[in-house]
Amino acid sequence: MIGLLIVDDHPVVRDGLRGMFIGDDRFEVLGEAGDGTEALALLPAVDPDVVLMDLRMPGMDGVTAIKELRKRGSRARVLVLTTYDTDADVLPAIKAGATGYLLKDASRQELFRAVEAAHRGESVLSPAIAGRLMGTLRSPATKEPLSQRELEVLALIARGNSNKEAASRLFISEATVKTHLLHAYAKLGVRDRAAAVAVAFERGLL
Image (cartoon, rainbow, N blue to C red; front, top):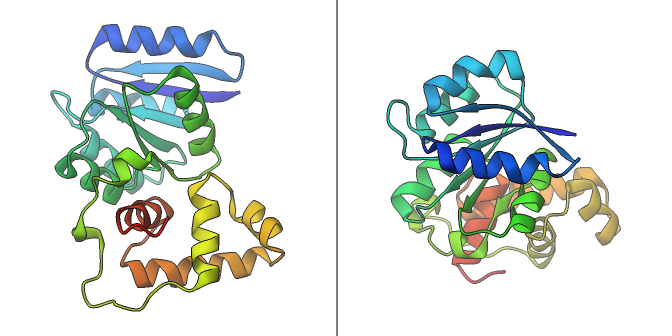
């Protein structure tokens, strides 16, 4: 089972999310918090696999909480679940270390798949959100195009494949997949999978 910590300042939203997840035996809701401060206080006791994190909350906001989670070395993956899709919201969350970014109008199955993918450490970024990301994630000086193989690897990652699965599909080693990804990161001017997929979508490469 995937252990969840739900962080949202609206009790009705927390109740709704809890009700969705407790009805499925793949998930276990370990705790709930109304803001980032509460979430960080709960974290050591509940040790979640995935944190569902709202962004705009009174007290400690979501981005600050994500940064603090990373600073503390938490193993939990953070999946942002919010109503906000502006660049000013998306970019800081991805840069802070969120594994994925989902809007609250996502369907139940989309949310379940996103949580499972985040738990596996895979990027979870809908094309709608990816299209909102702008040039601040790019490297303006980098004009070198991605190679065909780098595009193939990135396309598989964008569809939720792990490095191992991508390697199997392309008949190459997992180490080679990682190398292609590192090269793609450098060319796109990003530092992680979620940002690479987002920028590739925004540029029309995927």
